[in-house]
Image 1 (cartoon, one colour):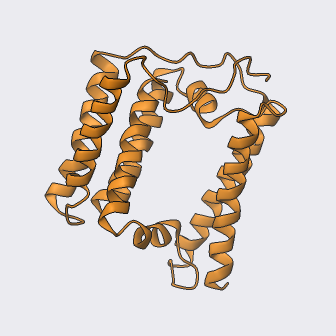
Image 2 (tube, chains in turn red, purple):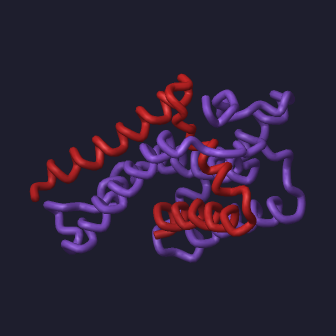
Length: 65
Length: 138
């Protein structure tokens, strides 16, 4: 697999998620925004802890390494 | 929307714009200093540990007013997100599985060079800090 195909794959997936967020904010057919589905996952204490841990891991992964 | 709520705006205003501006400026200053730390250094580790610990303390000890979570999610609507996230994880996993060669880089290998310039890195750090605050309010 070539490097450009890999990059195009990531770009397509990220664009798709940006499109989903845009559609959600336009109120299209029940698609939740990132904030809404994260809020839903964070209703429980365990879900809240896992999401916050994931946020911290991202910071560690990209800024401390 | 089937979630029953209007999409929220981000970042949300607290109704005190002067205080909000000061907080963002302080966070931007922290991001500027923290993102100057050399990778794999103790200072870099501390610079991400401090916000993590601070948000942990705030979330447990002095939780801010939370934004109400939706009572339920539309399964079809959420499935689009789930498919995209699963596909991204699979694409990333396939890069690791093949050894993250230059011809099949992982997302980390692609993003790393993009956030190397200090202004970009500090901007990304600030976004990370603001995202953490947004999560604590959820």
